Image (tube, helix red, strand yellow):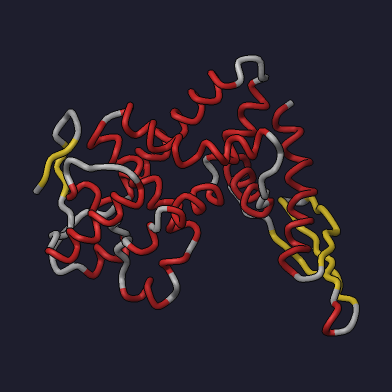
Length: 252
């Protein structure tokens, strides 16, 4: 049983053997951070599927993810507030929403190779869990939460900004890739507690030169058609139409 944080909150993480210790050391070198308590870092990598298969009762990383999400939001909001003092709240909110989005966090996760060190169960491993966007983004937030508890706000701020400054600049210059399906889903789930539903309207052309037409339905409202050379591109275009509609109205 370990203790962390100012209130000495107890937690149980997987035992660190010699091999795992080398892995955690390698990760810290890649990510350019240093934990005082490597048990806390190990816990940040511990997915629920792994704890379910572990022979002893241990904790998973979900509470660290919860904490990391809030710490991440505060760091990015504070940075944007001071970086763009003349920008309107709505403009800052749009930049922040992308920078802390799943797609942005997955880029960080892959850059610092979180997928190599995360602990997942056998079933999750077989189903490709190590490459699932939601799992990688959640683990990134858990690492942020763990580093905040381990080393404090100043150190975790340096780490977060080192990973995300380039993305913030890309968003401000409108040079970033926008995953409209993810942005739309996050916005709609937060606002309406439901998920967008995509429908194929038609497929045109020969096999080697197809054109897809897609609609997306949210509650009783339909947007589209989105058109693309494959299904994913058509879905992205339909999602863009819906996202821009709701984004403009929710800001007003």
